[in-house]
Length: 149
Image 1 (cartoon, rainbow, N blue to C red):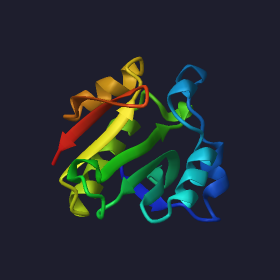
Image 2 (spheres, rainbow, N blue to C red):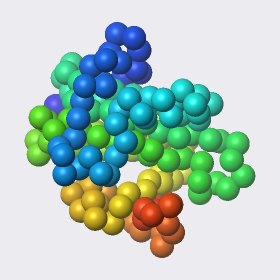
Image 3 (cartoon, rainbow, N blue to C red):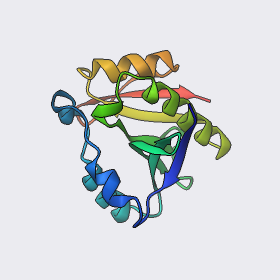
Image 4 (cartoon, rainbow, N blue to C red):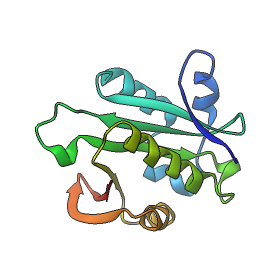
């Protein structure tokens, strides 16, 4: 299983917008189209990518890298992470998360933060297995997790 993060472009944008999570997961994440709009509004810090496995798009992720932010613990965020419903339960999410973590390491991050609802049990289980820990902080109505690198 070869996971790659590929920049979004006109060539793959529509395909990315067509990726969806299952209905019961939709409450936990913005659509990829809305995430793309957020990326365009935050071009200085947003890094959106399509997730490919063996040449096939299986998901989407977006990071926030704000190296000028005054608080070091808030500089690096995993803003979005989704695997299309057709590819869930097959190990793509776990494998992609390891590639994402390596990306942060390779680009000088000292930690990775993310937030999600405490009812997002499947995602929380995956994040905890990867070493993310609750910080005790809240981001709006979502719990904050952090992985120290």
